[in-house]
Length: 262
Length: 126
Image 1 (cartoon, chains in turn brown, cyan):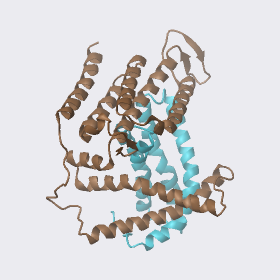
Image 2: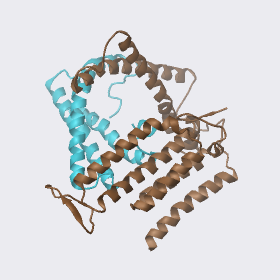
Image 3: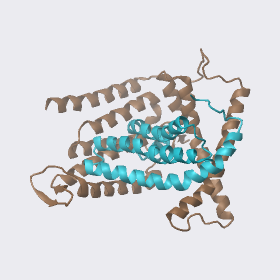
Image 4: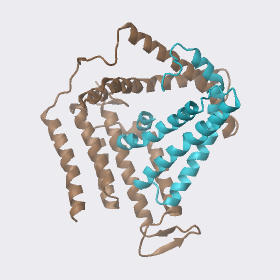
């Protein structure tokens, strides 16, 4: 049976399901640090390919992230335009100098591409983590890292509220559309003003839910600052987890040392 | 915002943690100004409106935009200081429009309902 992660269902054969959430976090941080350690086209391309490779071996359903690809395409286009108009990247030859003092050299687009690869590798690893970890495991990881229980409880409520919030938003929109109200009609100001009609019931619904959660917690004698709280589930460390953490640390240290020395 | 940003794939977790400070500032600045000026978010008097324009519109956006765009400049997302100022200007103009159009009716309409809720505690913080 497919396993439910924070974002989607992934095949049970995914090797990442065998890892505990803390070792997955170590991969996220390792790739993120790697991506930020140096801005160089070849290096950032390699880091991006590594994160894409990890996404593929984790068997994350790529069709589910198809809509994100439009966002990536927009991001790269935006970056290219911005670097063309507003950068001062030094190079051997200046192709165009703009009236406001910025210029385009042979390195301008190389650097823009390096930044795009950097952002993509950061996004791919975040996606990898959220696609292979359930919300329950994220909380478990926070508790294992000795975060105060109040913060873990708050994050847990916030994570679980996202889908609730999205459902309410959709219900209100459907209610308006079923009454024949077109919220997308008019110019941008009119459309923004139309959405106030959605936000007001959304806030009221959210407040009602907050009150219900508050009463439910209070009726069960729940107390945030309670000492000696025990956990039903614990994080288990296997050899593969230790290996993952060790590999993450080494893969960060080697490039840092290399760039320092050379 | 941090969770939403990561959830939607806009930015990664480590960067999201750093950038979430700008979202905190966007909520904290209006709170601080309203508190300092002893203004009412129901916007009943002239003083409330002044607090709203300073804290809710201008200052809710400015510090966060400076911080967020500076981080973007450091990571290479913005290529130069020119791009930084363009980013700050675009951010603030966009926010002013959205806040003026959406937040103003929300404050006028929703505040009195929120105050009626059992969960509302007057002067809880400070």
